[in-house]
Length: 507
Picture 1 (tube, rainbow, N blue to C red):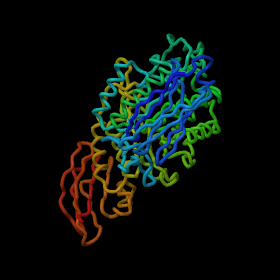
Picture 2 (tube, helix red, strand yellow):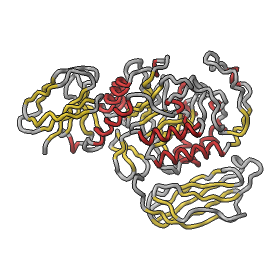
Picture 3 (cartoon, rainbow, N blue to C red):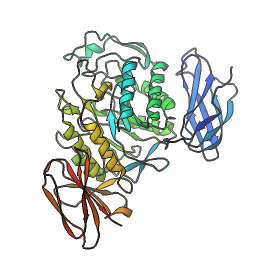
């Protein structure tokens, strides 16, 4: 057997990879197992390896400390373990490590840098033609978005009937030439699939890894949707044994990337062939096989999952009321005692469906409402396109009015002291966010009025404290100095929607 291949250095929270030769006969995804043990002064981690095609097996590791490390690679096809040494260098600029839950309801990178998710959704962007994928990356590079939700499996749904560039398994797909908007849910269109669910197509996963790396370079978290119901290929109805093999393969390939989040499913409750026991089994596999404890959640359509389950790190929620979305953040925070991320609160667009035709103003209002209640929201865009290239599924270019306003909101969040906001009862007819940290209580108020249009607001905190007051136009993205005040004071407003007042204590 040949030698293993690896680089001698890797930066902290980077991907260290060891490639070893092995057999390609029988079924290398099922019959052969590979593991790696990585040891440094401050950690010892064991991970599964995987077959990457062409007689090559790989093991990946994400080191959490700088210093000298050693490794041992062993498996049921290796007579003598492969061993070696490497050095982990300090993290480079922009590399803050994986995102973790911080301060109960919020997030921070592992090095302590606050992380405020301003996410977006592009379900099937990695399954489009390479030039469209590159356009998506160029758009993301210019945007404020620091998290993107997308699917490992291809997606079959309205505005998304094209075949993916690759498939996750060896085999052949059903004939999609007769698909129409009217018959796309007909079970007959699923006839003709011929997959070997125990033989992965490494190329499919290699292309996904390249995009995860591209996002990591841009400082964007990859919120991976591992399973979903929008499927004409049979990937949503595999057997338990096939599901478990898939989960282990995905974890072995992707867990070493610091920017990965795990979403067990998009709209889990629409997957009729999966039970609660299945979802809990997948979660158990994830907890056992991912040594880095990346963020984990599951996304609903109608029925919320029980986010109080110990494996869930944060709530990933689709609105469950036709009208209320961000307004329920306070309730969900109290119920689950975890970060609340509204990963689907309708999309800015003009398609026929109610989930995809709200205005930019309304989407931005929902973001501000969620933020001031101590939660986070996720963007999406569904504008009609002559070639059905909708950002929400395909990526490409953004056409809406909300992204720049979300950049403005991100600026406001980064100027907030402490770590994240929570709702404060300042008045009955506004939503007020204050710092979550007790150390900053009484020092910072963000009073948001949404679709109300007051011409002025009166305030009183005490007789002696001085406050710097600013009028914030969340839509026109302006901050106007309203002076220094103490005691009882009145702030004039322009009498239009989407205004806020920021009040900061002068030390």
